[in-house]
Image (cartoon, rainbow, N blue to C red; front, side, top):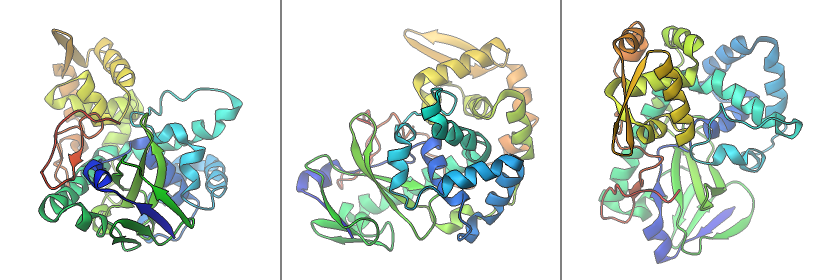
Length: 329
């Protein structure tokens, strides 16, 4: 049993994120890929194997190298850094696993990322309301059946038998789409501030129909401009800054700037400046390309938070209410 010890300061510093990003989700997806136990992911697993073809065996072999979820953050440390970009994985033989994870991300996660992010934003809002109405302690004891709050200790009834003292850092709470409903995961360090995180699955009902409604139009657009840039086109439908684009895609600021520049050179995006801020919007050609896909103009199946969750400070779960300060992670 894992025991996480809280102080009053830790309670005040507990925060909630909508997601650790598509690469972190891909690490959990990799773990699921080589295991057939969770029926909610059977259709997703089947479609990904069909997409990968003969290469599927490599990902199955990589998946089965991990005996527990807790091994993933150590193996893919860069993936658990907010803003990690699947298009910017360093080369080298020692990075082979990271490159495979990035490949899986592009095939298995990014094509669905718009819907997934909508579900994660909705989960964050729902749990945030629990914290605001009933306090952080109620939230800590409610996120998963295997998590139990016995003040001042949070017990995880699986994983290694050890004690974790937060020492005033607080805890990140984060929903995940690709965690099995029976699992939750403790991540020792996230981001440059090395904050510990508790990652727990969204409810199974949130996954209904996401695999059954194949996103052929988004797949086609992704094949044309790349899945990340296809998602960038969708994010730019309402116009946004480079920082907001990075938040919506869950990638680095440099990665967002690069994708915007490529779309601009292709005539799909126009960029204007307001002092030191670059503002991007779709051109008529970009709008026409986006509207050619029914997938991109269909409404999301869950409420979408318009407050970026990666660079904006997440909900401060201290009973005061939602915060919008800059995040420390």
